[in-house]
Image (cartoon, rainbow, N blue to C red; front, side):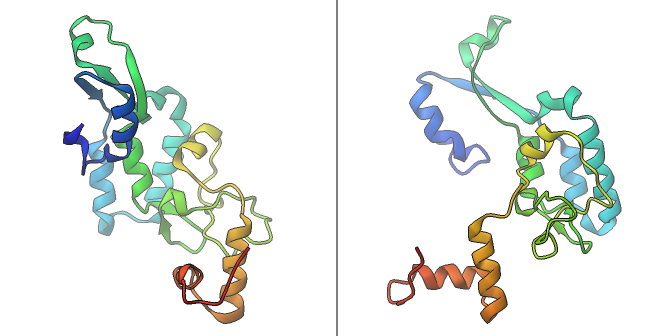
Length: 188
């Protein structure tokens, strides 16, 4: 388990330590080409990222196995019929989520987990980073969920927007103020 600490698998160490008591291997899927494209942003624009996103959405069903990795007991690797004991996100899936490559309204690129997937007529879609559906129309709900798009505006987000509009306080400053023990401001 110690070998996983500080790696992309750090988030599964606790789960593995409570369920795997013998040597194991992680059968992983990665995509060096995607990582290369993402890291060379100077040669790639919003239109190219839009095309990549549309392609991945279109091909999601036949390629869905590339988004998951399997934890397998090492002894089973040699039997020819290894049985996964735990499924985790693949390196490819983690890479998709950690980089800012999703085009939002206004031509900027955001991480998928920071992007809202709202109907174009949603009254607050212009106040949060929304997927630019004029450039990208996703059809596969499983792919949308896998990327981690936000599907609704939560009360917390509304509160943050109201505070920003009323006193121009950014989100980080707002939550630092709320967490500050010396502050007399309480939110329930």
